[in-house]
Image (tube, rainbow, N blue to C red; front, top):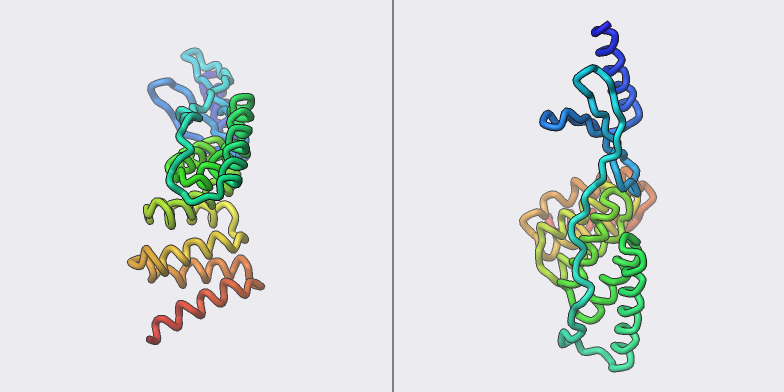
Length: 227
């Protein structure tokens, strides 16, 4: 009987693998956690293996990092027309109110970052978009795209920019802007990584064979080798 019970448990685990879930064992808790690959998943399913051989399913909540503060300055020395600035602040306040009603709405956090960036609050934009990433780590590419640009041109953190552009490409291989963002980073700022340009551009062309933009980027890079 013991062997049959063990085989039954093994069968459950094999089925979970076949369903495309990621399985790992927490020895301290004696729980096998199955992390769903759905981008909107807010919890994981655990299989609790009790001492008598019984199997119990349980929900394991995913822990989000603390949400960034919604209260920040709106004065950052950016030369904005007063009417434009007033309009941006109005949109900012509307977005904050929306977040207070729906704290896990990704679109609202993305909008918060856009408004903060327009006002010159680059750190505030970073916080908003990083939190949007945490809400959808393997789904929405917009926060990664925006952070790739922000870290490159505004915060000058090139490894972070690279990390986000690579994630964009991994999530959406047919998104040309992801390759362009990485190409611009390696070409203009993170030049010690320039040798990687043909590698990811060729991968991009393989995924997007009709893209003239990617082919032109590769041709431009190859011209720099001749000089």
